[in-house]
Each structure stands twice: as C-alpha cells, then as structure tokens.
Length: 202
Image 1 (cartoon, rainbow, N blue to C red):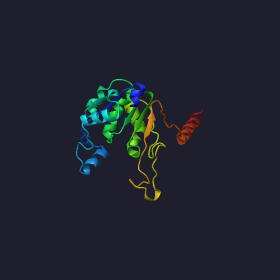
Image 2 (image 1 turned 120 degrees about the vertical axis):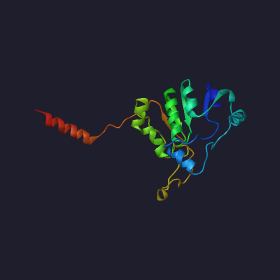
Image 3 (image 1 turned 90 degrees about the vertical axis):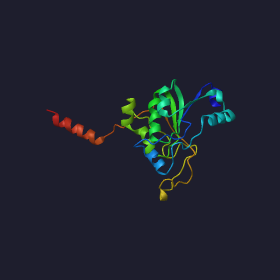
C-alpha cells in the first residue's frame, strides 16, 4: 500500500516453497535440519501469498519472483531504495548481499530481521567479506543484538543464555549504503613505526 502511495514497486523474492535445502557449512541450516525439519519449512504457495496481498494490500504495486535465490536474484534489474531481508540461513543472506547490494542506491537502507543473532550479523562488520566481494569497507549494522528503539529486547544478565530474554524481539536492524568505516588506530604499531624511524635516522 505504501508503494502504491509513493509510486514505487515492491519486488518480492521468495521460493514460495519454504526454506531451501541445507548448504554445507551453514550453521543455521545445519542446526535447523538437525532438529528434524525438512526442506519446505515456512512454505507458502505463490497463489496463497498473492491472495493475501489482494485482500490486504495493493497487488498492482507488487511483482512476485518465485525461485531459489541463487536462480532468481541474478536476474534482478533496477535500483533499490530499500530492502528487507528475512532469510534465516547464512547461505541465503550471502545470495541476497551478492546479488542485491550492488543495486541498493547510495543512501538506500537494508533492514535485517535476524538482528539478535550476533554471529549472523557479523558479516556487516567483516572487513574480509566486504573487501573480497565489494572492494569496500563494511557498512556496519545499527540495532545488532537488541534492535532499534521500536521495541528492543532486554537480556537478563543472570541467565544470559539464548533464548532467555525478558521480552520477545519486535524490532529490526539496518544499515545505510555509503556508511563505511575501518578501524585504523593501533598504538602499538604506531610506537613500533616511530621507533623504527628513530633507529633508521643517521
């Protein structure tokens, strides 16, 4: 409905078959299916989703793109003003970043649902990841751990073991494309450099 009001389009990428099969080395996928879940968990058919949008939204402002991310996302076209990722698996997050981040407009916002999972969110601070795939510094992520102040959660320090928390997550984390930074303050290295210069002086 908001897209209809502002004259934008909402592109929905989803398998419409639930979660994908496990990718080796993906800790969330391996943990999920170790519990006995099978591919197709959280599945909603294309017709079911389209029907919900017709009842509660503006289907004319939406385009639905079925398929596993590795097959559908490489065909994305057009700049992105905002994207919301709720994709669960490490492998799915990777596919979204690789294929969609380049289309996110400067100043565009990426929202992330899995903000309480610190290892999952670490990719937004990984200098290796962003240098390897995008040749830039990591963008960071606001709201990691607790979410932004829309409904933050509170951990009980006496029982700080997941998922012990005082209230359930009701928020989101986000980053803005163009916000990048690298930590470059290493006083021990500075001292070593100064000492080397002094030793090399005639």
